[in-house]
Image (cartoon, rainbow, N blue to C red; front, side):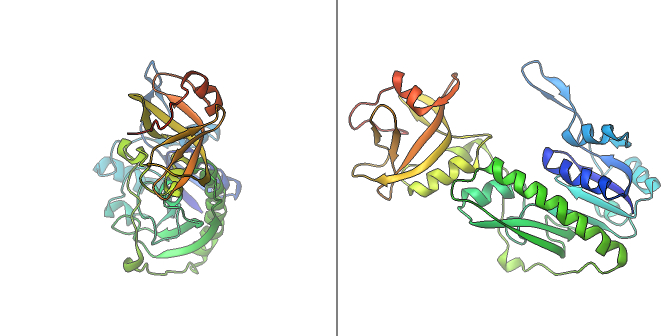
Length: 309
């Protein structure tokens, strides 16, 4: 099929390459404009742009799809279908109506759960033991279109956002590969979403990452792994910010939530349910990431001292 692909981050690259490997024709690739990154704020292309350039596919980086000139460009590319994976812009109805076979989207959740910008992170933060990927016919609204195919993926107790991201990225590429032939043959299912079952996955903000040790230890652990490898959960100790990059659930102790227990090697914090979360890798504000044991050499807690207090 003749396809216009729209995507931006690493998550979309696997699907893009799978579409190419399956022999489909890439009419054009739409991705977000280059953005300044790093200390020198150099303009950096998106991962999808780099992948498109590898096969010399035409690349377009409009600021908005609402521009009539951009819409004419898409129309003139004459796609049979538009495939959207984490593009970062909402497609206006004019664009949705351009391809003969419509626009389809790959979403990193089992819809209608976790509609929104950060479905993988929130699935981990909320302690889900299963999530997945869904392909759907795009419509007006945020992730509300009729579903085509789903694939469930298990989530491990200690699995991080980054690890789950890669599993879902590969599962999503396979699901698009299964979806496109169904669309071409006219046999793609249309399963309406039940809005009553819908949940939201809003963008991750700085406030999202604040650890609250009055909550159960599982909530602290899930927040740490749900924001690893980026942007990181955080607390403070002795007036300095402290990011937590890795953790595990630990045993039961007595005391006030936030109380630190340490033998010089292990760093544990008591939570609201009487159970501790063990901090494995931390980073003090302005410092480097390090194992908790190394951190404790210069920050040995006093008896009864608390974190995040």
